[in-house]
Length: 451
Image (cartoon, rainbow, N blue to C red):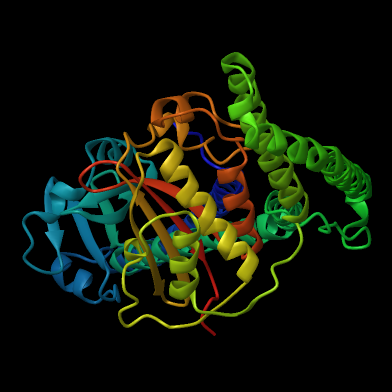
């Protein structure tokens, strides 16, 4: 199971904390309010019952009193019901035979013993307070106070407190989102700088004044990038210096080998064979030195200018002794691209050379433009590139399984790496795909070729 991200966990923590706090406060507030309202209602009802008891006691003092008339003279409002039990009979203001059933048996026994009490009950689903008072050994007064309005008020209060708790939880989640955005901002700066370095921008640095609390991280990161930049520059200069120094002796060797090669008919068979091998290896060595020099210069920015890509592709194809008809017609695409002419020429030459050496020869060269991004595609009819090799085939000096599977192994291992470097210099990339019908398709994407 995939673990939730840091931002998600922090936001969830803030929301859960806010919900727990707001829910606790809501429950406490509800209980305090409910207790206060019920206690106040109980006191008011008991006072009203005591007042009614005095009136009834005084009214029943005469001979043959009218009990129902006495009860009807009481001011009970719309919520209270008054019941009188006298000499074993129940009397009410109105005909309500079920009213006596609402009086709890325990409360009735207490009152019949000469006491008084109160008890909370539910009558037909409505909460009510029943108060009993003994008026005489044969007479008891009961009042039922229905709490419909109070119950509705408490329900409304519960809904309001619930909504407040939900709103506080949402506010906590928003606060968590803001906090994570603020806290993770320095990490995003580090990630952006690291991405820039990955893309080849070794000038990316962190601002020491942006986050004083992360001064140590900023200093360590900038120091690491400085060392990486120095090492990268040292390696680049070393490759360029070595390649430059090798050129002079290589030219001498090439000239000498050329003389031997031209006079091979005057040499015996074994010497002529050895001279041919020397010439081939010197040519390969020269190609490697040229690639190293090109690789040392590949980190420089692209110098864009208007170029006719199809005309350039046809001339590169002819220079590789291939049929220029491999270059598909331009169609409706832009006739000129803003690219580095030298780099685009190198991309085409290396892709065609790769197709010849390892892909059984190129079968199509396409140059199209999609939404301002130039797309160079070279198809071959070889065995293709295995998925496991596609992630490393553009690394330097990679000629292992990929090259062996696709043909001969006489390349320098730098051709596709140069293609990747030239694409990156344009802000683009290179990928290898399966060609419909078999073979490989190398695609180079160059953004911004059309303004």
